[in-house]
Amino acid sequence: MPDKPDSSRTEPSRTANSDQAVVKLTPGQQGQVGLETAVVEAAPHPEQFRAYGAVLDISRITELTNSYANAQAQLQTAQAKLEVAKSAFDRTKNLVESAALPKKEAETAEGTLRTDKAALAAAESQLRTLAATAQQEWGPVIGRGIVERSPTVVKLIERDQFLVQVTLPPGVSVTGTPGAALAQAPTRNANIDLQYISPATRTDPRIQGLSYFFSAPGDSGLLPGMNTTVYVPSGNTYEGVFIEDTAIVRWQGRSWIYLRVSADSFRRYPISTDQPVSDDDYVVRDIPSGSEIVIRGAQVLLSEEAKSQLRGGDDND
Image (cartoon, rainbow, N blue to C red):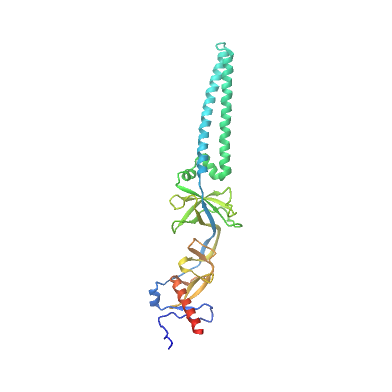
């Protein structure tokens, strides 16, 4: 004897204007599974690119900063020694001219003066070389910060901030400077605010795209050597609906949400997730503004729909 239909089961039906089954749940069933819905409205959102971030080891910045400080000290020492040598040479020269000292004393003082002039020139050259090296390796902003010991560089050295190199996908560019960006922390589910510093002086060889330097807070959970996903504003905006990942289900290689079509009916609706806001959230263009979508419990609806399809297949055998 065949089983009697279970009245508590969800039985999808199809409508003439949709290929997707309608899943029915009574208000009581919706409460039991914790189903929640929300009306969503389209709004302008900044377009973002998914980029690759690498937290850099800045030991070279520390080395250059210390080397430049030492070179500055050597320059100051050379300047002071030259001033003393000039005074000694002038005094000795006057005494030699008045026959108070032999001529060889003036020659000795002149030799010391020339040696100290050469030392000063070498110190100046070393300082210029270090400044040029800093700019070549790290660009004008960080390079100048190394020379001037700017707050940005000091924070990097003291690990109050970390340096993140962000590389865009090949062929992708942003309008103007990127400004702020968002990174995903590998150690926790949170967005990390990244502050733009400057264009990078080299790309990531694995990505081969445009690259930028950003700073991340020292307490963000990022550490040198870590990789992270970064979302960089393109400089453009577009209309779309903000959707959390909890509202999205994956089925047959596509992403879907469930729309409420009546008090007890829901229909699966295909969406595109090509505009992520983070690893968990998206801005979707193809959802009609004013739609009521399922924000909690979508996976339950998909499971019920799949079960019903299996039951339907068994009935046809």
